[in-house]
Amino acid sequence: MDTQQGVTLRTREGRPYRFDPGALCLELLITGGPGEFARYESLHTPVDLLHWVAVSRLPGGLEPTVTEAELEQIRTVRDALFRLTAARAHARALNPDDLDAVNAAAAGPPLAARIESDGTRAWGPGATGARLLSTVARDAVELFTGPHADRIRECGAHNCRLLFVDTSRPGRRRWCAMEHCGNRHKVRAHRARTSENEAPGS
Image 1 (tube, one colour):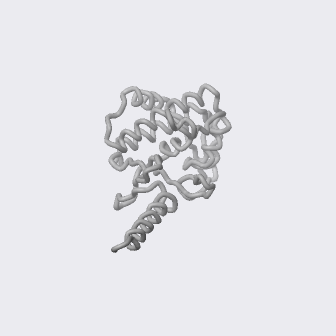
Image 2 (image 1 turned 60 degrees about the horizontal axis):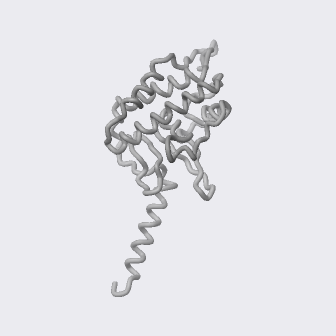
Image 3 (image 1 turned 120 degrees about the vertical axis):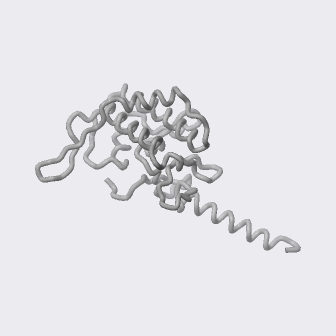
């Protein structure tokens, strides 16, 4: 696993940039979503979920056994979590059905870690898609009820809908990534200022 938090995304032009949503549960949201976000779906097969696990902030070495039914449930809970996160980012009421879906997933047994004889950390046996989902859902419960619950945000760019939690000390994060939407905003602002200065009569 990459020691740097976050995942690598790509712009429409194919340029990579690092996006850290700040929580495991929010990392799952980059795999797709409900409604208009279904076109970004990347969890088509259990293997796709294993690819997500490998790049997530979960410690390395996890290789859960995932069934098609478990994958479908993960997509369902992910979509519910997507709607809840977007609602929280915009101070809207949380949908009870979506809350029920996340809470039901969190009630199941999570992934288990273990200490090896040499003192290193490893995953315990029985890692499944259901246990992975429970772990992600429990992370969502901690986020939505924890100290950063009021810092759940949507990227400030007008054409970016990425969701994240601002865990920075000052709490002034606006962009999904400074190197992506933050820089684009700076460029647009600079061009606007330049255009105003060059306007006739200025």
